Amino acid sequence: MTLSVTDVTAGFGSSTVLRNVSLAVEPGEVVTVVGPSGTGKTTLLRLLATFRRPDAGTVAWDDRDIWTMADDERLGVRRQVSMVFQEPSLFNAPVHRNVSYGLRVREPWQARLRRGLRELVGSSRPADTVVSALETVGLADVGDQNALSLSGGEAQRVAFARALAVDPAVMLLDEPTSNLDPHNTALLENAIERARDRGVGVVVATHDMHQAKRISDRMAFLHDGELVETGLPEQLFENPTDARTARFLDGELLVGDRSGSRAPQSPTADP
Ligand SMILES: Nc1ncnc2c1ncn2[C@@H]1O[C@H](COP(=O)(O)OP(=O)(O)OP(=O)(O)O)[C@@H](O)[C@H]1O
Image 1: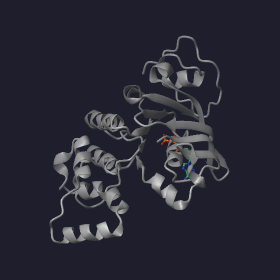
Image 2: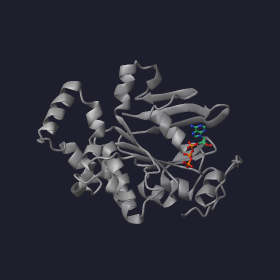
Image 3: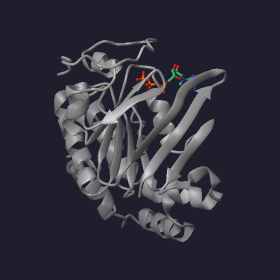
């Protein structure tokens, strides 16, 4: 399944945040979206998640415009797309209940009733997908612990496990490691790779150029609401076609700078 946006424009009130942006994620690839703060990365992820409609352009699932689908069908697509936010937002319950949340809300009411009864008599155990998702993020042993007692890094890994447990076709990760130490970052990046190897298409918005270099199959550079260029990470780092890409990867912020031009021939773009 391919999730894509084509020529999307989106804004808030009178300000346009994204202009004519096109991007697709295929099964089994990691696409990173990099760019300065406030450039529209989260807005792009929210369009892909169908949390909001674009003002113009299309959001498609295998070439079918999601916003022309009937509500049921669009809900079916939405259920195959998981998003992980910058803040993990866990609730006051054992970790395994947090991780099974997406599964539970997807259950038909009969299954929900049966499970509720099993929980009442104390014979319920976490679903295999919950256990497996927790193993993927290296937290198999904390399933019974209250989620609010976890460290920030563990909480973010639980949020990732919750998104993975529903067996999504696509995962959208909004700066998933921005508040994490190197150890938790490594564990989460490992989990991203494992999801990718299972055929999940993953889009990661990140500020971390080292991370983009490590995990990307493809990179997209977003600047001031415009998708400046996409390509293999080595292409963007070593031979960018646009000067803005070279300057951003070289460590310049480029806030409010819309002057695009050909990249210098020998950019010093190694992060
Ligand atoms: N709900 C909203 N209402 C009004 N403006 C918004 C809203 N959400 C985002 N914006 C504005 O849209 C622009 C893009 O925001 P967005 O969060 O998509 O950028 P970003 O690249 O993800 O930023 P960051 O890297 O700092 O998270 C910003 O100028 C932001 O202030």
